[in-house]
Image 1 (cartoon, rainbow, N blue to C red):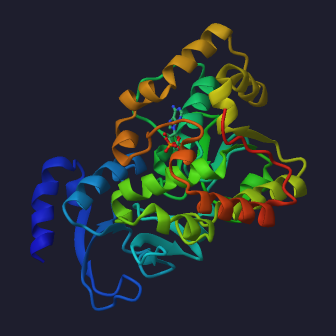
Image 2 (image 1 turned 45 degrees about the horizontal axis):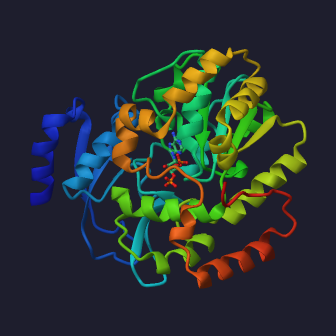
Image 3 (image 1 turned 120 degrees about the horizontal axis):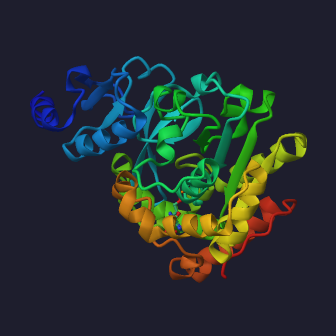
Length: 359
Ligand code: A3P
């Protein structure tokens, strides 16, 4: 318990809700490693918003805590897994009901996400990770409210599989909620109420490079593997949120089988190419009128540089990296590229989507 004491003492200096935190040691929490003891934080506090948890989570991980997870959720359906890449290096994830989630503090199980309350005018931003979610969240938020913001709010405030409900329950309507989950795991009301959904897609080669770098940065993943061992298991769906291919195919299917569900599909590369045009599309979809002058101000406020200076928590988590199109060329070997192209045509042959790999 020495580690626990040290953590408590240092943690007290920074956590305003410290009396609600309770450090415990769970002996059997990691799959296949039942004899190991790991120090956990029991996230019992309802006073700490999802945003704050991420910040606190970071500082605790730096102190050697393995995971923040609600005690009552631990061992129920959610548990930690260490997923090896092709070289044997492991990435630590939370597995809950077959879904691989990042090792971040969770406030509900995947099953419970289904019953999150959705308002008729809520808007859902649904993406596969590393596709530009934070960027489009900020653009959309500003277009929606008609206000330019310089706060540290990001998608994590309304990230429904992680954020505590109180962090978005009182937000003014229309709210912009976010998720990386498939439709079958989203709140039932999304389909029932036919709310507006925005999806952002990005070419899978840049997604893979971005995900690799992010996996090495995100503290809870504790991943230090090599790129050459990462690509194939990523597309086999072994890491966070499963396979990009399954995600894209699933969402295409959702659009096909629910033609009356209002879905706006955006591409990361299109926004890079002409953000003003794509912002006009978002405005039209949302039913808001914004002047070109206002759009220019949103543009200036949502560059990587601007967001990198205001979104401190996201920056510390490694959200902002290069922010371009085509970085994959610096990473993919010829053999990896051939392997991926073959896989793409095998799995995505029926998919009408066209991705841009360069601009
Ligand atoms: P790279 O790692 O290729 O740089 P997400 O928000 O879905 O996790 O996506 C993260 C990716 O979007 C990262 O890609 C990140 O750099 C990029 N990104 C974040 N903010 C951006 C912005 N304002 N403009 C362009 N790209 C941005």
